[in-house]
Length: 164
Image 1 (cartoon, rainbow, N blue to C red):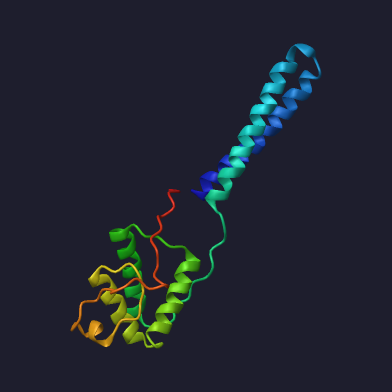
Image 2 (image 1 turned 90 degrees about the vertical axis):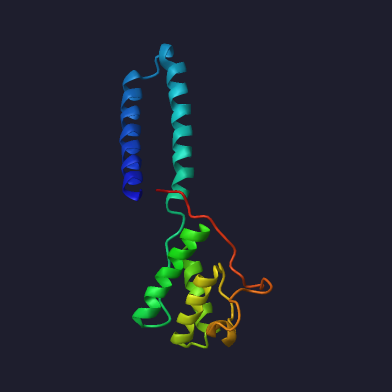
């Protein structure tokens, strides 16, 4: 979408220059003044709409997301977890949220890659939308892997931006 948006923005700049050239040719002839004023007012409105929408196209630059573990299993499970959240819960998160979630998962797993992988498997298989400290019984399958009470740090659902 970004390339199309840039193309539209460039065409608007060209259009604005054409309007300026056209209005300069007409000069200050009173018989065109009402039409020129209406054209200028409409153009100001179009530019304002463009600028408002521009904030939605790319609101802020993404931050670099680094995985806390180097293993292929963790990387693949993290991708699966994000896809699971999107597919089952329509939950999308940006780079800042993803970075914080990874930091939290690392901390809750005791910085142990194997436990972090087991936690991700538990969250997916149990249908959880949030990351929480899983007990050893939950990880082993002896207990059901669902949160008993919502925790303060639970992740709330957000919708994926519809900018496609």
